[in-house]
Image (cartoon, rainbow, N blue to C red; front, top):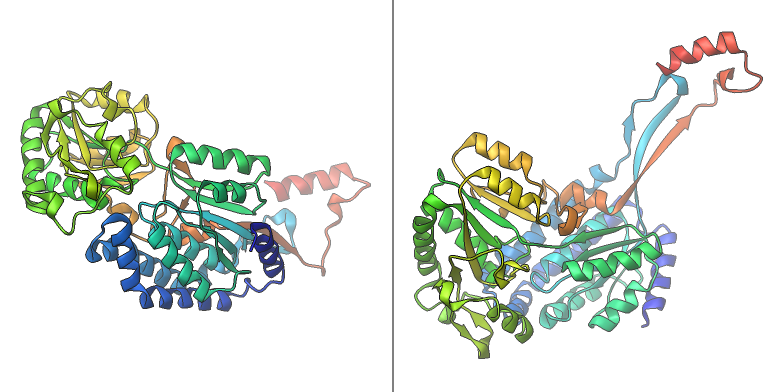
Length: 457
């Protein structure tokens, strides 16, 4: 079916009011949750085929988080969808005022390949909970997972409610030429700019979940063994192909050598002496990205890893030292298993440095100094992050997840996701049993003027 025909069907379905009852939304969320559980083993097999993810990592980072978000929204949608009374000024007596969440209508969800299930079904969950219809466009770079996503959605929903469009750039371009009521995009900054250009043409609201070079700051008070353990986990998860992975380490010069030693020890502990033979270690998505990553590595600065296997598209967890800001690895988001280590001598240097760079999607700080923690979280601008850990801030429905500036706009997860896919109408319900005359002409300045001053104060 052509994209235009799908959209026309979805517009008619939405305008029929079918998606508005909360009971319908909750029933659809339950249906989706049951389907994800039913096809869990097939999902994990697809993730293995596309990215080399183990079943454990597939559950931990994809199906488990999807099921968590679905369960959360099933439990909370009724409360989120309820109107909320607000204070009414005396000047509007007699009336009541409230805000009512209202779905945007026909939404487009464009998802990436690095967490293909999670970053497709999570925003879809929020869109359904908010009462929208959706066209879902999964990535062509993860075909096995895109196929199981299409299978699940087709089994769960009629095309006039939720539809899947597969394909590559041609299909992406065709979708962006259409008029949607809301667009949700996750992916690179370059493509995000194109999405925003198209949505600007039709004044369509959009959320962009992008990326960037997320710093990991380690100060001299940090517990280095634990810091290294958590940094290695966050950096090399999914073979480094995580939008909130620590892109590089910025550590105090006094602890650099000890930190590098602990990082090397942790790589050996977590991935073994031959990571490329570790069945639980993933791979790079395709040859194009594999070759790009090889071009970012300087063997003279490599203290661990640096080996690669082209036939399996694998690159061993790699650590670089003596890196400068002019090196190729610092000119773009790495999005792979390469970890540069840079140093600083004082925090004013850090603040000045980060202020001059694009705002990252995440920032991580390892420190035992509470004053320093408060200072960094206040002075640095970034989407979100962790203190003394990495990655885990996105694994909750109780907090919104999103970027700022160049790393994106808007957020989702839980209530934040419901509100992202909703417009909040402000409504005054004026009573008819009384009508104060002071706003009508002819004005009686002295008397009504004094009364207006009283009401409006």
